[in-house]
Length: 334
Ligand code: FES
Image 1 (cartoon, rainbow, N blue to C red):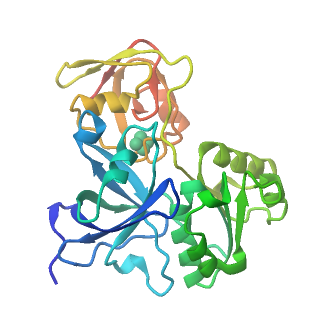
Image 2 (cartoon, protein in one colour; image 1 turned 90 degrees about the vertical axis):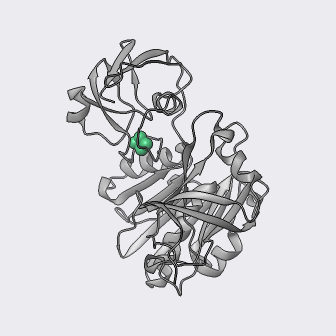
């Protein structure tokens, strides 16, 4: 069996073998090696990074992360898979990645990075899974793994309307009565986080993925009821957005002396990427840790959930995807 074509140890070039549209806003993509070879395995909650070319970003090529969907209880994706399946929700106001993905056709080739997992599923006895919209994608794979292991779980899946929820038939076949659907436009089924947690056991492990508002509501309600932090697991499906009051600042790259201006409505990470700086990144939301960058000087407004309080207080490191400078000028060890 031939190995899939490798660009570098962690890079693959894969062919789009199928595209489906489970809702009007969401497309799924099935990716295979051109030679049909087995692809590296992945755990529930893992994602792929897909390269978005400069023609779509308007600047340098960028990477976007999409969770891997696994719905086959008879196969363990950790052993390797014949295809990766991911889902992309079209964001017309986004930065171009989803529009590019939605314009692709079967047969197109994509550069991807091999799977990584920032949202691992532990092996607790009883799990509460909560998903909002496209946030269902990592949760699908968790439900499949729990079903395959005959573990107890409940899956609450919420969206603006019932039609906006993808994979409902597959999930119903997988989870049966464990699946509870919620639609914002239906008062009878609209998700009530309080009611949901009232019916749960204290410290029952919760895995939640979806929009920031939903994750915040679930975490706040669980903490108020006394849940331990170690039983709260979440993955944010939105990137950091500019905040009111954000201002432009200058950043200097120490190795080259290059000076860049970070506009008020752009992240430091985007400015660095667009100007060719070599920065690793993944989540773009301040939790994966990949974009940690050493700071030589400048005051930092930390907005991440990755660094420790001690790291933040040191003023010597920052997550450039979300954090900003409050002193007008920053010098980075890049
Ligand atoms: S890219 Fe994940 S913390 Fe910045």
